[in-house]
Length: 434
Image 1 (cartoon, rainbow, N blue to C red):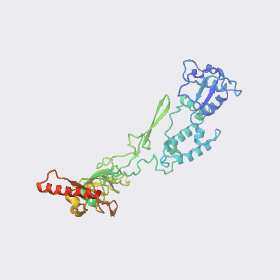
Image 2 (image 1 turned 90 degrees about the horizontal axis):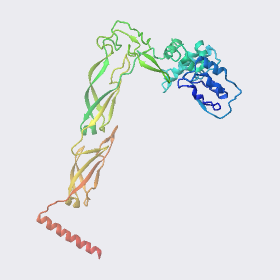
Image 3 (image 1 turned 90 degrees about the vertical axis):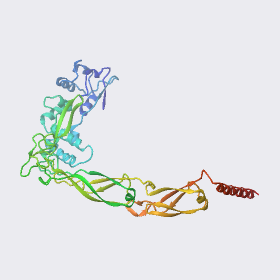
Image 4 (image 1 turned 30 degrees about the vertical axis):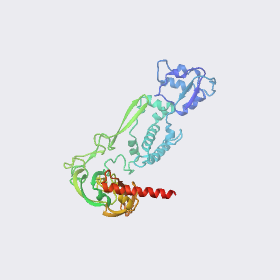
């Protein structure tokens, strides 16, 4: 941004609005010298510089720099420099401009360059070439910049479709570009939900599922056109598959690229196939054998390649993604690759120890409870858990949490025996203190 000081003169009173901007070259001159009589160049009610005022402004620029005093400041924003966009000098010939454009357009064409912002850069390059390749537009631009083009009567700011400019110079360039909207495209992916019971998810299973997908139409072979008919170029978009609309706003001209509503982006108009109604694809059901690996869990996603929707115009099909949902078990719980189980144990068995039968995913297994087991103790049953996904030779563990049950009621004989045990325990404690 350039800051211009001009004594006590308030340059902002000129009524310069956002839609008027100055090129960097003009800004440099203004920053060197700007006569204080600039207030006479525009009327009090005007919001734009007239061509006469612009001529007066630029012819009055002096290099003596008479405005040395401190005062009001004018902030000037520079438009894009079309010469810099094309990478040429201001005295470049038409041949140099054309050569530079061809090189940059090839590199930044959206169908070649997939980087973010490539399409906008391609449009900027095309807009710059459109102006600099036209002698009249170039002359106005050199004198007044982009603002001069927008304010002129030659339609400056309403730029030609950048892809039309590109096609006019690259008739034989095969980029699979905007002029080939009817090219083959990959089909969409399909999603299918599969519910498994607890043990099937742990050990894996082979299941047959039925899906509904789009398959290529046998009548038109996926082209969407009625057999033995010819397609013609769309007159709305000129075969590009896209149309560009321009809207003039106080901030400048905004362009929007949209799919052609006449050909739906195909770039061609043809008699639709009666079977698929021009879609090139029809809905069909198919049964697929699916192998579910051991160790899947709720949220697992299986991918079956090339079982999604068929591609358009002979393109490759998409993939089928199967989302797994696992039903819970009433006894065993799952924690990743471990199985959790809670067993109830009498206080007698906790004291004396015992062997009890415990359910696992492999069936009923004997578990040895050591004597003196405390309430809340967790016992590990190694390799009785869930197989690791895609590593079925490795398994998690089953974790058994011991819950000791204390009876609320005792028989007379049981109570008598507990009291005797209590007396023995007290005598033992007293002897240990001596």
